[in-house]
Image 1 (cartoon, rainbow over the protein chains, first blue to last red):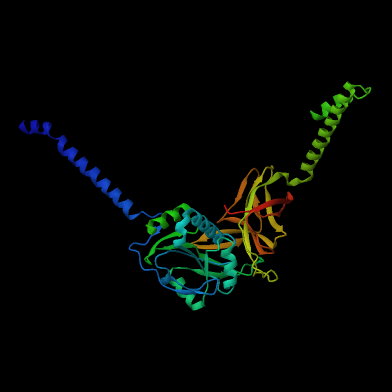
Image 2 (cartoon, rainbow over the protein chains, first blue to last red; image 1 turned 90 degrees about the vertical axis):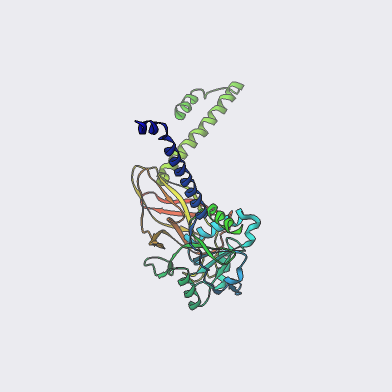
Length: 207
Length: 178
């Protein structure tokens, strides 16, 4: 009886405490989740140092990734004969550049060719130049490029197309890698990610 | 309706050179113009069987000609996107395209196969009756192969589509960044 009386007086308090704990835990978990996924793209956790490389830019000057510390570097692999996917990415980058305003000066927009056979620095200059004079197009020796493809998981397949006027096409993975000012590989996005997602993630690492 | 009004008008035709007559002559002239225009436009629509296929919002991204225009497979490329609307009762098929700004134009489709972007030519793109087929980035597009000149934002050019039933349909393409 006494037990019954006590249970009728206090059963709510443990329940309320338990509920409070659950709410607190959920709140913390939500806070945690927000903290770990502050990026819109797919994150590298923990972020590895981005593999260094030196390639030739469209002015035939060497471009070394390690020389870009302090800036954000976006890396994309594509080629100048690409009519659809690569221009979609470069068109998005153009929007990103505009949206960032002054902050864009701290961003390097870099397309690395998957078609060194066709992509001379001159072709790369014309191609990226159709989108922005600040964009960078890189090529290099087959050996230097192969090392970059391996480090960044780039797959490329040269394909002849029967019944088409195209000389050949290059099927390729199409991801945008974001390297932060400390040289760490932080995030990757699909080629058609909306510009606002890239702008968001760039601002995260420029803080 | 136009025709009936025009016939009604002809009954007033015999008139003297007074004000009322001048007014009615003017009215008749106007009706004749409307009638001719109606017949012309109606005939036009019947003449171009293409009226059953409409092209909406055709656009292309800017691109450089690359300067190697003499060598096939080495020039500049871009893609034209648009919405094809089949207003007809029967399916049609897009068989090809041509434009003055490129050596060749082909219908292609981009697909992703385990993370790798691939393009393949589409020999005939089916446009079902009553359907809207959208050509957009990362999917169906008309690939312009070996550009003859640079395409800059604000440029316009003509693209002629070859359809199995509707015949040739020419559309204006605007060069822009979305």
